[in-house]
Length: 242
Image (cartoon, rainbow, N blue to C red):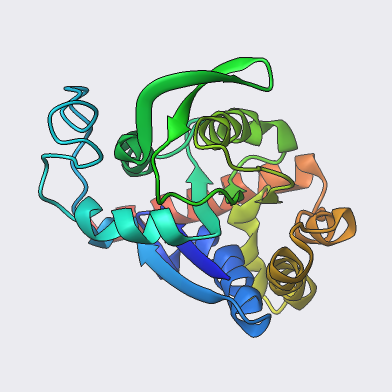
């Protein structure tokens, strides 16, 4: 099984997204998958111009000569596309949207009705498979992920891929401070690794495993106080340096 994974966080391995995505990727590798992980911050991916050149003039080939040219064959061949992203303002980060828009050369300009909806046909040589979403958010509640999930399900529908359960970590901004204070979170990271193993072995993550990753760290009122106190302390430190 081939997997292409993207860490779409600008913080790369220093962010909350990596805390969940990295063990998930490790689990997939342990289950026998061939995984390539890319950090979008390190890639040059220009926005789609919507010109239609990839559809008509150079079918299946984008005129932009950037890192997408290296990614296209990997996307065509991968059984799983895994997207790891933070939630800042409800939706997916801008660099991730650029990547998604540039997937257009993988489909034909011709359409068909699929599951009652008009969708593009895949170009020859592009595999069908799955899309997996791994996302972290700073707000306490789960519905902060709604727009991310809706977007990625639409993407999956257009490229004829399945999009099942997502690996979500709400109130993620508490993770690093809690670990610094010695609070054990190993069960969350072990569950993320198990989710990767299940994805490869079973084709889906179990409800129990994804629930373990998103387990409550603290009540909402306590979380707000926790975050506000940390913010105030950071501001106080900056003022001392002025």
